[in-house]
Image (cartoon, rainbow, N blue to C red; front, side, top):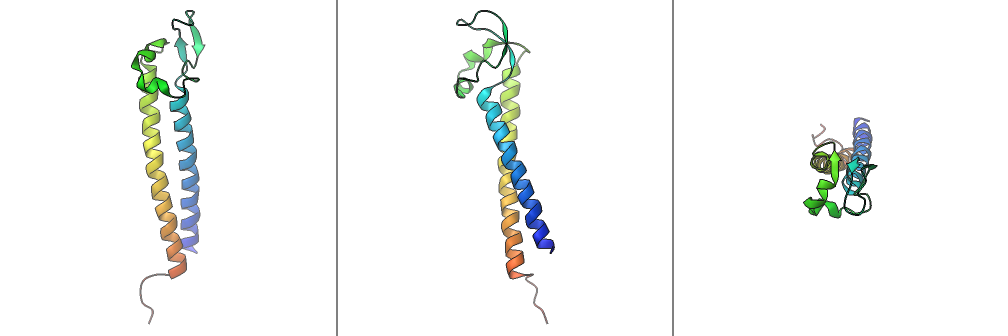
Length: 115
């Protein structure tokens, strides 16, 4: 019975890891919300200037200057969501390993010999 609980809790952790992974990926792809302007749109406006860039802003640091307020928001956004992405990948791997471990425990029982 405890092995079934172990599989269930690990599956719940895997679902949470997948959710965190998708949120972090979307956060990186869309970029931060900030007060921005550029040459094509010279008036300051609140919004997500990198939402249509398909993540290309990550490799072009010149685009990061578009965000005026708050200061350094792009660097913060990239650091936060990159860390969440790595943590979610590690969590997903550990939960999947625990699910396989629990499955083997259910199917094979304990390794101790019964007398």
